Image (cartoon, rainbow, N blue to C red; front, top):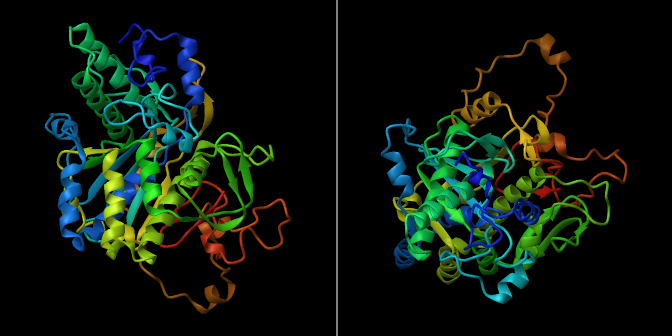
Length: 457
């Protein structure tokens, strides 16, 4: 891997990734790479709470999911992160590949709906990485978004020396290294080789994320493709979302009015892919804003399914779960029926979403745009999110402190502090009057709370 072959992101063709791809082609693929939300994977988690009502469906979906043994094999390694509690950590990986689980092209009508090019665009980047933490005691669950461009050390690739890259790229490097190794060893370029390469990609991504977060034990994983998201959105549409102000983007097809609105599956793709406003160059988006869109979409879908009674509608649930199971991969030990006992908080709104901190934006030695990070700050944040310190004991205020204390201010970046003040001018987000100020999120910082449909940038 010291010959530079680890720099491959998946190639210009999903099935024909080879480390010899020209550098300009690899950069073109990177420029065209777009965001994929992990909502479909989290809908799986939310939907499991309904499986207690849908016995036969639970067994059917549990058996039909694509499964991988890679996480079980990794847990058996001496260097594996130990499990220190009964809590459950699930890593959701959203891939930017435009192919199915066999590496074959999707139907033409799906490419039209995705508005994201065909199978010749994209590779195997984990453009969405989210850790879902479900406490064993039933307390609030946590979704932790890992910015895809964080520049980190890549782990889990046999024969490779240490190197740094965007965290999303670990999957593609693992995939390319394994496929090349197998073909060089005389293996045919068939489905068995392809599936082995996919497992190697999963191993590299999981190992890289585990180390980056501070040796966090990963109990399960969900791998979601662009097709899985679209099929899930089709099954649950119309979907209610909310944006702070009207915005359009010709690249993603986004065209949203301010406030609450219902969208279909094609518009849902645009909602989670939008990276700019082509009508107002001063209205800037970043990958962190798109991570916030992911969080908002998951919160909105979970709230909507519960509010509409979908979780107790056997016919509707059958459609949702069947759609999800077509283009999703899970680890071999994930049992949806058992997970249903732990995941109730996801549908009750008892979950909050947070994006890990970065220190700024920069450039890699290869000239790629990256997020710079302080790994100690990241790991401290993860530790606090997974094992929050107990609240300080309440104290009885004295007459003096009661009289002079100012009203408690919202912490920087929280929903309350992000609500646009009434005195601000028209350049501020134009949130719909029906949206409570506490549910308006003007940027990507702070925790986004579940249990309602949030209004975001």
